[in-house]
Length: 293
Image (cartoon, rainbow, N blue to C red; front, side, top):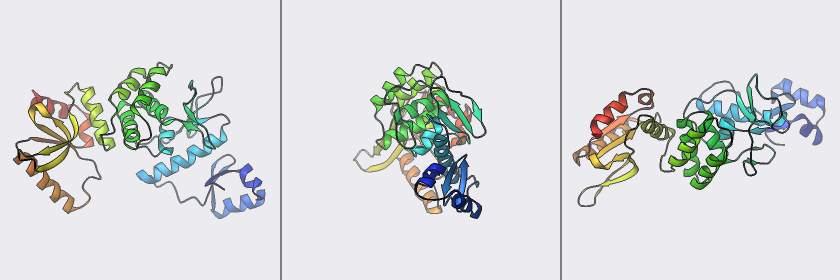
């Protein structure tokens, strides 16, 4: 049996209702939705990043199995595909249901009615929107930063092509967020290596900053390698570095990065660093604008 199992599937392999109830009482199985269980579920509810995604993935599968004709979508489809988001993961599971079906919310679930074209859904035991449709729906109904985070990661992993993103963005008929999805499709890039770098690109666009090159290899005049940098504004030789929370995990990491930055500056390249918190207001944009004139 799969990890997430329905009552009907359990009965079909020979378990009785009493055996199902005994497994639930003993804690070996966990109720995820009406008639849907998780076998051998770990203790959930401690909402660190990994556990929250695990919990969401289990509940998303359960809700799809509970709603006939539903499809996992938006952030829930992204989680099931292992794609990162920029903003904190919403707790509510997102599903699409056929046109004419009831949509709205119930505890823990948001139901959407989307017009899905052929190829927009990957059928299976747990149907979910295709990778390209998932990326564009997140872009248009969540945020541009989230759209870049999932799209960039999908491109980097080879799960989708740039042409597929553009195709989906162009043919989505729902007008909600259409501009955002087309913007993300046009600028999505597998060169960005983290959600923070993806959110930085959204920040550059929002503040109408000149767009830099990405993941550029810097060399000395003699051709000696200096560093590979996140962002590079060639006209003013400016390096931009986005520091995520997991980038420096030890004192040695910090020491190595200090030596790396010293080498970049010694080669005549000014460096601007920022953290995810700096993307919340316009102070960073003002600082970059002064250096880019």
